[in-house]
Image (cartoon, rainbow over all chains, first blue to last red; front, top):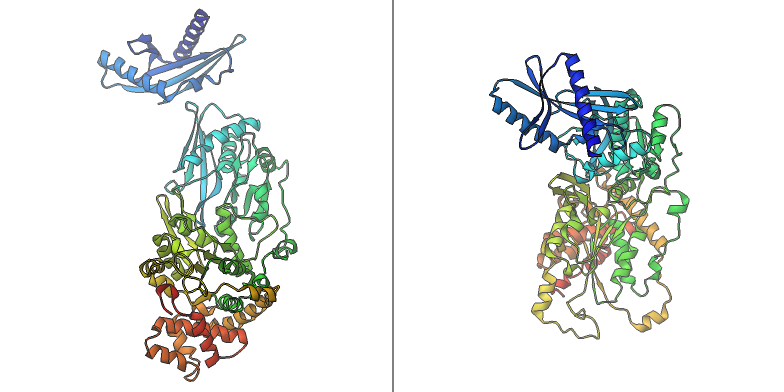
Length: 118
Length: 515
């Protein structure tokens, strides 16, 4: 079960990266881990550094994927992003937080992208 | 990005303001945010609205729904905004047309299944909506009778969210009840359970009560326990003239915001009777409320009778707080979320025992109270308060022999009401030029300058004044009561006899030990 979910999450993040690349984003890092947690995708959109949280679901039974991104989670992503920037000495970059939902059902993949969610 | 605006009414006391419910749906993480100073009960609207919409078949988009209640700086309370919020969201979603909502005011609470629940204060809300120029009001169907009392605005009743949505899509109808005639026979002609003729053997007191009713005079009744003070006071409303439509609307508006209005069968024109217990707090009598102002007993007794039984047992600060509303006919209630002015033109009836044990001055009984104890009891009613009492009745317990001879009292409420009504008409005609309707309202200077019954008639009063037996204020009070007695007897001006009766009714201030 756990492997199944991990596979789904991994698959969703791959689709999200494909999608971002098609939009012209450069993927900088994936699954940037630190002690506190993990940033799914770090990319650049022109001059802007974008931190992307990806939520993947195989059904809408437990609500829209975006509903799983709680204010608490956003606060954590902000902290992680600050840590990420500090460790790489990028003080002047513009930063943005995006969310991507990947809905996989019956061979179809629906991607929704929200810019600047926090 | 989608935007829609619907309208509702926010009540501050009896005063309503139109609130624009602005709804914005934007591509953001899903959220349902309500801003614009909602209080706790209103903040919960988001949960109710989401469930009600979902159970009516309208699922919210996975986007950010921002609801702003404008003007955003006015504190808002209660559950009556649910309907406006729900329709605003559905309009922003494109389910209903946003243009349909212009000039329409939506009032109602939503149950989770989408039913529209009744709310408090519909009457004052609609009066404000009409005065603000809104053309259509949608209210809960259970509040329709109340809402129909307001002229000049198109009133529609709805029982569920779905019904309202269908109406806005021109696919259905709302309830439009023909407004029933005010003073419907069944309500206002119902037989009275209380009648003045049930008061046996207290003819003088009954006479005093009729004078009080005719002139609108505040009155006190001092007498032993069981002598009939409460019985008399309860029958005062039965001999007061019916309220006018405007007056009963004012009263109904107050009752509407405290949930006391019973308007299913039309307006009640009966003057109200409020008898708060002597343990009542200032907030209960004058008005209070947690954060938003709510009316108290003085406002519920508007155009009616406020009866304080065992008056000296009330907290002193409660009695003192009465003075402002006695003076101005209204009361201002200040709470943290704002202040409100409520009407409070009531006729005050105080009842008290002559002393703590109740036997002082009662024929054939012994008082066990010391002088000091008696004084202290009487002094709880302050001078300024007792000064406002035009009539002070001394109620003696009636003897067995008197009861045996009389099955019923001599005067029925109907007879007394007829006398009171014609006396009030005479007074109103005379005082019209000064803008007053009742003798009790007349300020002393106008009274003495324009309504001097002549030297001969007031000779006794002048002697009292000269001898220091009465104050100048007491003099004015006697004069007012004398005019009321003259009005009751159909005289054009008080005679010496009327003035004498007035002095008798004014009586000594027993509680202060006067004999």
